[in-house]
Length: 203
Length: 257
Image 1 (tube, each protein chain N blue to C red):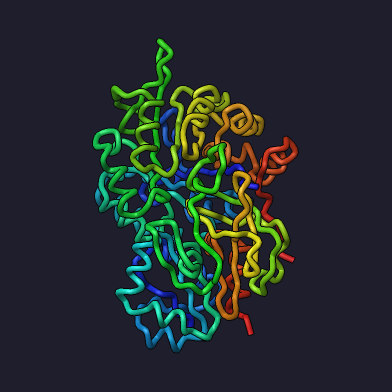
Image 2: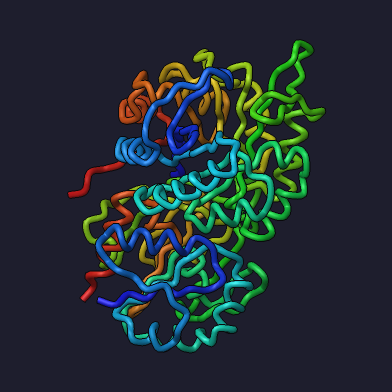
């Protein structure tokens, strides 16, 4: 199976490559449109700022390509946010693959009591609704590190929700062949690796 | 529910783990990757690897070690020790580290925090602070592994670091480090309650109750320890069950069905 991990101006990409290797895959780190298009699985990973990462995808000529992919695609962290309509971070128009889902700053959602930002650490995922969560118990802990989150949590595209500081957000989203998680499965121990394996074995 | 984090810290010299007591008297304790994997399996939430090698050659060894850790370990890890510029951070992140901690270099050139946050994002920037409570009750910062006093107050410096873009503060109380008398909970609570970013408690862990106190009294977001884990005084898995029984939000890693 050919797995393409999209190489663009985002951090922490190597962790995803490492984790895919640990679950027995042999991923190709690439920004080559032909290689991405031909892959059986595509991963858009990384950490970064929404505006800069969208610009990087655009400069590499990959925005329309990513939108047009028909094989299973997994967005991780900033990858999930870029699949949404719009991000408050850098006032950025994103790929629009998840209609109605917007990326908001935690601090603009909290009415009064401020919480610590970034949201760093292990938090629980609930209302799991996606084949990538096969075998993952409700309320499992996953590793998060982010300051912006995808809302509304009651979106029909929500595949998992997580609560932080009294705010619920979409910790996973799913529409058609596009899967996305806000947390880092590549850093979430054995359960995270199970999610990556599930993604690779989607039929 | 965001869990409180338990973070074993591994001091690494020439590719091997060591642990200092009050920053002197190093004693060898094992292979960093094997030890890290073992902690991960027992339920560690993150790991910290500190390079205490001074030489250029040692730096290269450590970078190679970081790449091995990143390939083999499936939980987040922070690396630090001797980070003096953005190039060091880039090298360690390229090797696969999730976060990098800066200490003395930030005291000397605070702008390094802005540079790291600007280049790589706040989430990778952990500012480590070694501080000592002096006889007058002031918490003074120290550079160079606790050897050189710096004219900076812990609370003012931590607030400045957060303003400049630090993602987390790792506070080590030199009074408590190696003492096994518990964490510096008063100072921790003052830090944790005033800062907009997470605070990691370090220095003084001796028994399981000390961790509970760091969270419930010290309001820490995470607690770091070395010796009590390395020498088997506290088993991570038992510690996490203990904390859960105390009503502290804690991740108990399930075994897969």
